[in-house]
Amino acid sequence: MVAAVAAATTFSEILHASAADLRELLGKRKPSSQPRKRLGNAAARLGLTKARLVCALGFNRDARELGAELLALGYASYDDLAQHRNHVFVTDVYAEIPLDDVLVIYSHAKDDPDTLSILQYLMLRRLSQIEAAIDAQVQVWVIERYKREVRHIYLNGIAQIAFVEGRLEQGHPGFRALANELKLVIDSKLLSGGEICARESLLASEKKRLIERGLAPAAGSNATA
Image (cartoon, rainbow, N blue to C red; front, side):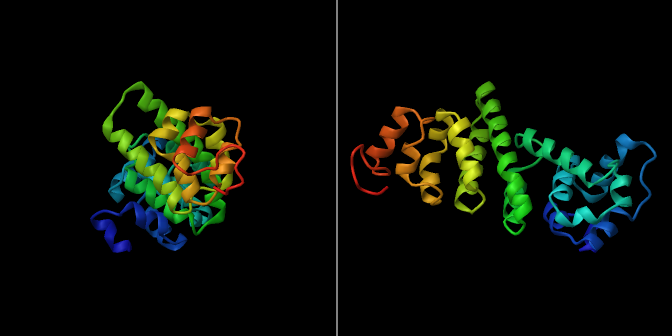
């Protein structure tokens, strides 16, 4: 893998690299004496943007073992990197981090329970940020990526019940409809249609739509969703 640095190192390679490979990739050259340029210089050497390097490295569990290499990038510790990673992941709206990279992060997290747990909270904030961007300026390409991301979260085992509860309590009904999210919750078997309809946070129109589609039992029915 290290030989690939001569051309470009992919996002996935950094995300999945061992601690030894990360040291080789990050520690081969002397860092800039100007802290603000350290991360940018390292990213440029690897053929990545700063945001992509922050997320690929930050979501790599083995990066916790790095010391001098993180200092060379301007981070006092892994926790410092993790805070920056969280900010970048939450606030980027497909500008610096392509959707494909986001989906790679999700797939990688399935093998790391700690990261998967952290993502439940981060995904809530991230989707809210994307929704705010769509509200501010409707762009078809952002909407399509948003819908793909939501679908991936539910149908690939990324969403857990804490995330679902957060979306039902905090989410916007218009965006739930846009992403067909309530059906995705049911298809992912996290909650049944009947359990969703029991949530007071849902609009009556949303519950009615589930019943009309046969995804939830009508009021007073003993049928299961």
